[in-house]
Length: 245
Image (cartoon, rainbow, N blue to C red; front, top):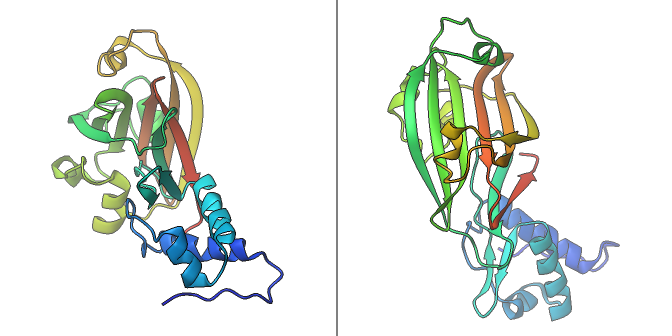
């Protein structure tokens, strides 16, 4: 069913169409990666000019909801979900409009003892075990980012048996283990890689990267600490934040 626009409203027609199409994307009616109707079809759908439709689509592209592929059409952008409550992270080549192809590889999943002040970050005792998960993100088949996740073992020991490559830790917490996330602290800094982190990224020790660190809480309890190291390459990191209804 098409939501009608009002020609009596003071708001411009293209902004009304922008809101209607945005709702279709946010609600999941238009799936990530799917091709949307053509400009001509949208003109007939809303009974407006092509200029009006084009302005609405350009706004959706500018806000990161759509991507236009020359000769192919307009598509709902595919977002890579990173650890976070209301944060979606996606990458895009700086030099083309095409969607990038990413591959997620879990290269370590084990139990460790907290060292180097990790117990203070997780707000646990020094003798408590921690689940450690290391994930390599490949962009166009080349290492682009490294993600380290630390979870107090007592929070979710079953996490060691879960398939992390095809679902996020946050989704598992909330949907399977009833661990409700209440807040996420996020910080950014420039970080110099040590050899242990540089090797999987196939870059030199001492190379600078952007470090995004997230501390995830359930109530006042820290349930997850994530370090996301973004290497300098032909991809750019975008963050989309939006309120959930």
